[in-house]
Structures are given as C-alpha cells and as structure tokens.
Image 1 (cartoon, rainbow, N blue to C red):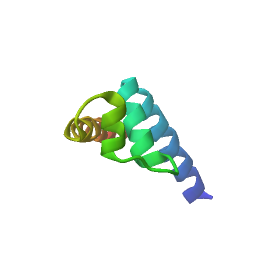
Image 2 (cartoon, helix red, strand yellow):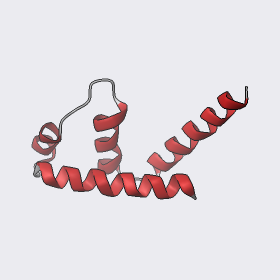
Image 3 (cartoon, rainbow, N blue to C red):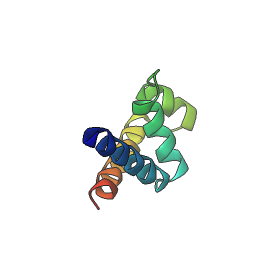
Length: 72
C-alpha cells in the first residue's frame, strides 16, 4: 500500500513537472520517452525543421528541468 502511494505521488510529480515545460519541450519528451511508439531524433527534427542535434539539446535541457522540478 505504501509503495502504491509513493508511485502515485511520483507520477503526479512527473505530470506537474511536465506541465512546467514549454509546449515543444513537453512534446519532444513525451514522444521520445513516454509514448508507446518512441520517435527518433531525426523524425522530430524533420517535423520541427531543426537538426537532430538541436532536438537532443532541447531534450537534455527539458530532462534537466524535470529533474530539478522533481527534487524540489
């Protein structure tokens, strides 16, 4: 029971942290990590009209921000 409560709290924290991200960063993280069918950097780069490296940079910055929000 305690483990289930902890999981629920962590999940709520994750969703709250995701809401703090800008739309593009949230979309990239969801599509790269949270969706069942994971998209590649190149797929997202083509859609957003930027390089795969830029998508990776956006993803890294968003993950850093998420970690900071989850700890706080």
